[in-house]
Image 1 (tube, helix red, strand yellow):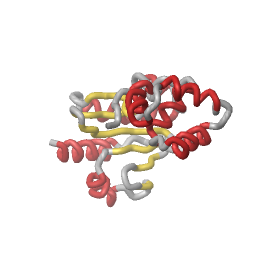
Image 2: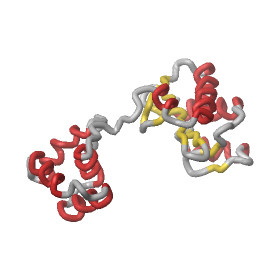
Image 3: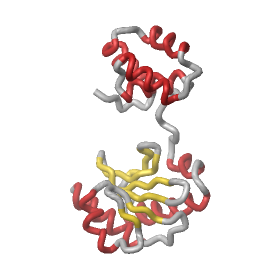
Image 4: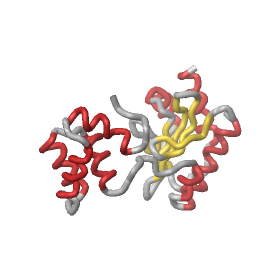
Length: 184
């Protein structure tokens, strides 16, 4: 069963059980391929030992010094890590949504800022080099709003917006309202 613990070590008991060797064996093996690139190390574990992608990634990344999958502890940490214009746009979007829906929890999930109600995600955003993506966590919601999204690039689960997007409050609130109705 996949672990929800962001620490790489959380995979170690399953690695020992599934592949039949203690972690000291795997750490010694990683030292023998330490000079290889990440994809080569992953491929070696998968092809030679039958590792799953998750287990191979946990071992390789831990061996490279990364002890957790979590990159940002708070939304503020996330905003500091992206382009200042993108951060301004994202902060403004979340401000609109949090003002209307103050009961939603503002969290970091999948290393991106999200709003959730209980265990259900309502809205998320992420930054790439040239644009922002917003996500109402529902294909049905996106399908419903697609006719109103002329000028936007609509993907299966996300909507692409410019880094300097002039906030469309009506759209954001509509997406959130539709998603909340769906999970109610």
